[in-house]
Image (tube, rainbow, N blue to C red; front, top):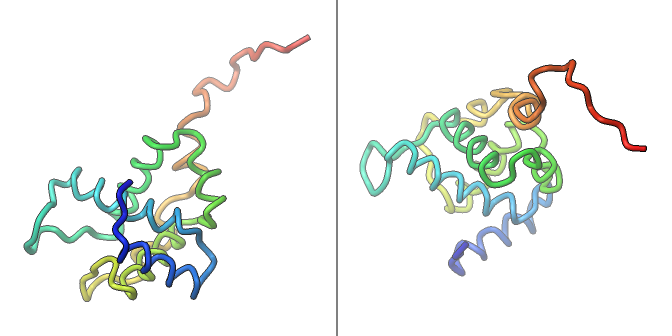
Length: 138
């Protein structure tokens, strides 16, 4: 992941001011923004490049599952992320440090209680049939 020095310094300033989330969380959000923009075909400049909070949250979920699979929730927990509002806090910290842009309509409420982490990151990997015989060892 090629991170320019200005971006790295911005993340260092954010983490120095607010240590709730690790630097990796901010790098991941930047990757998720790029991933989401690509999925939505929103690249370059213009009015159509804005990504809503819900679109970004969906992109974050998809990108995390692709990158970390069933370990997504654990990875996020290690980074201090436990709910969708945490993603909003990270995004708005990045906006306030000029690392991301936002529209006047964007608010932290766009990230509140959008999905449950258990359902979004864990249940997808559980077997559908709860009556599956699991072999015992020994």
